[in-house]
Length: 231
Image (cartoon, rainbow, N blue to C red; front, side, top):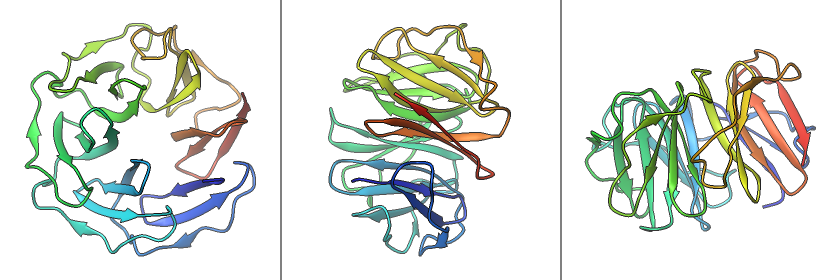
């Protein structure tokens, strides 16, 4: 598409063409289900809520009535991504629970992945080859076609309540922490990282997501702060 779309935990939606000027937030059919993340497979979007609610949309603006998926259960769902290797959506819970779906509606029984462990997982990112999971405390794991790699903590990332990952360049990924810390990876896969640094222009504003188009990075906080960076 040609616009940014922001979705709040409480089902409000706002749009922006440039990441700087935003439309008034409007309530959607999503309602209050503590929405945590959205994934896109090239055809449609799937949103996941903290307690296992799911909704789908073809345009990111008009959503189906949410349903609570029994197989997901209440596993503190934090992230959803799309695994292009296996053509399926992947939901990730804070304590290492995982569930998958080929259509975003019917989900496998959630199971705790031993290689992930209880590491306060918070975000998923497709790096072009695999899904990368990043925890709030700097642990990372990669979803290979048939298994997850053992979680390992990157000392250069540290514990900065990491919330989001986004492509920074053709050879690097940017990680954003809630209190304004950022780090840039050494490779496009996100395997190694530069030392995390506090970004004063961001400040400690409870940043929760970062996205991009071909001109700007756009960071969004839980309290409505916006910051943009030319790329």
